[in-house]
Image (cartoon, rainbow, N blue to C red; front, side):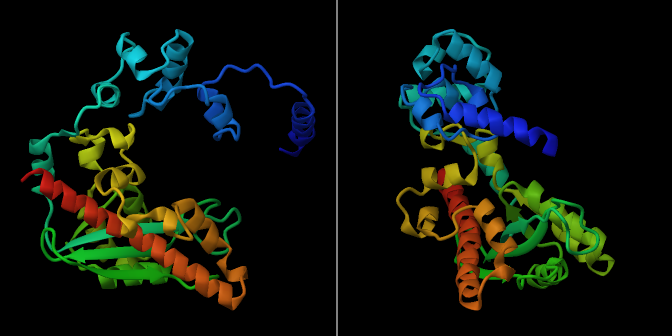
Length: 318
């Protein structure tokens, strides 16, 4: 890639030396490969609830076509048929017409009927290394180093908390796997948000440690996905903004709860957690202690959020 660097520098320098704002049509290109730092400026003239805010997997090219055809607001989009899905139309109509939340009680009840107690709310954190320090890791593979666990004995019951954070600067996989097996018994019902991530990590650990494989694969096979009621559209409200991520669902269901405020944390998202742990071994002891506390607080909030979201689902079927 080094042969391209000089050309990139020339392009960047030329852009920086321009004295007038370039005339560029906004669209999905503004998020490729990452969100542009000037997006807030260039999108500033758009109304709230505009075509670029349609979620549920609508293609960027479809948004670009609609914008190019003069369909800017949600009301504009509703006036034309651009081939949106039922969930995308629900997002638009809910916001444009200020509709109450959509609650499919039957689907939510079907989901809750699959939950078994005691229930283990689980969330992992991982990091990556460009050049792996240990065996059996390829470049940029996810390496689990931390998890949080909230355990409920009964629906809407009190939740006990357990957690694990590996020592910095070591291969965390073995200690992670051993503690996970110690904290969660075989055949327990485990719930995660986007369970595919946790299941993938558990499966890799099972392949790496044959002596723990039976237990780990039992955990893998008894996991369920808390995102399903929101991903399927069984519950939707305008505050979710076309997203079913936990960062969209939690404030929509539990607004203004200071206990559930990610912004009050020193580490606020998975990327920050990953970067903090990757550099942790290079920090002085007093800073290591503070960062470890911040990592534990962030991961704990992820599983506490799951507890609160599940409690709301039970309320919806009353």
